[in-house]
Length: 320
Image (tube, rainbow, N blue to C red; front, side):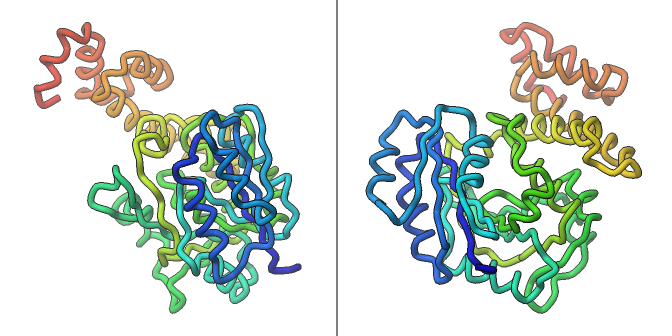
């Protein structure tokens, strides 16, 4: 049972994609011991899709509670010592679990693993991968990949993850022991974009991480998946990092670094809210950040952004 692995899948109104996701998991060269799907109160034909798989999967249905709660429910309904996550619109390449478990066997000190994933789908313009989203120089600051095309990383990865989280759910495998050590998935982030960033950051603080540069996952990009909202992602990251100070998750000697990341995240979110013409979010951000902390250019943007939208549209054509 040491290498037995459970796959936890939350789903909500993904009937058009779910079958492809499940077929890819069932076709793995390293078979999962169990597959648990939690239907988060879907209103489409998701139950019919799940029924096609019969006893090959375990499916549960809950009232609509958000992806966070559905993912947590799937984990708690599973039994194996290793956990893998997959979103119900993503697709694993056939050797995904084989590589994940082979690396964990070779590096037994690692208990949190993630890999790269390529984007595909109607809104994946120009392709690209998750790791491409990292800020310039981010990966170089962690060191060079070894001959297995991976990196073993300690708790200092947390500091790097203040700016960018490379461990997206469909790429993650971790031990159940580590999952329990970090308190599992926190349901307070239900319905929030970037909710998975809380668990990932806690895992790197209390575990040993293995970052794999190989692509073994395809991450679907489409108009209805929330990962496409950069503004909501920044606001979600801000809430998580603030909670990591308030709840004592982040070590006290890193609080200054977290606070700096909080300010940078809000500055980025303000600019995104300005171009989205979201006046309420702009006000909320200024309330948290204080007007005097905005750059001079962002102060001008704030005044322009508060003008009625029919008038301010003219100003948005300027180089603000």
